[in-house]
Length: 253
Image (tube, rainbow, N blue to C red):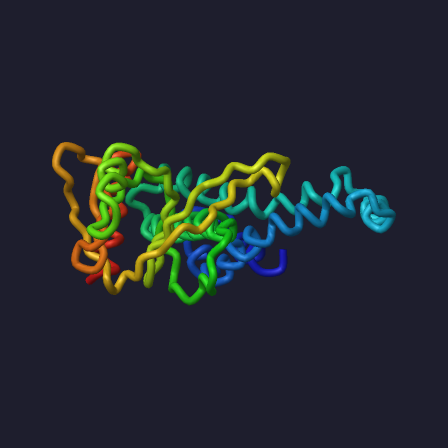
């Protein structure tokens, strides 16, 4: 109401230029990432205290039809609606003055949505002994089939590993890639969200990549310490593989 809405109202007569509002405020939009990271905690607190007299009294005084948790959900819904709105405006603003700003605003909002989504997964990592913030920016996260092949160790284990993939959720940071096992939780709300138990990580400074694995367009290899450890990774689609390979290549170069 105090800042963004007032700026938007300046463009009532020139809606095609509204992209500028988003670009001017893009730094402040980062707050959504923090808000969404805190959402599971606020949900948990709300469940503990939702029937307290204090909240009921607040709702009555303000004459709110909905309880507080419905309002706490609004920002999460809003950040996803902004990108739909911008896409729709862009559709009808081809070749007009503000089209470039609208496109840039959309790209930036989609970037924030990706960061929000990634960070929601990252806060669910358990068992990592250290500070995840020290690994640099989280660039990508996703689920893969992983086969391992280690030079050291028992040959039977190695042979077995070739056939049976492990399901692993990978988190690619600037300084390391983390391998985690996804655990689906039972419960509701926050408790239902999956968690990721940390298995091991590879320092990106010692990682190499083979972009194509014979016979499968969805596979690539990450290897460690001059192929002492090799991880064959199968993405769900060739497109996902291409995105990861590009991002890893950027980190390595």
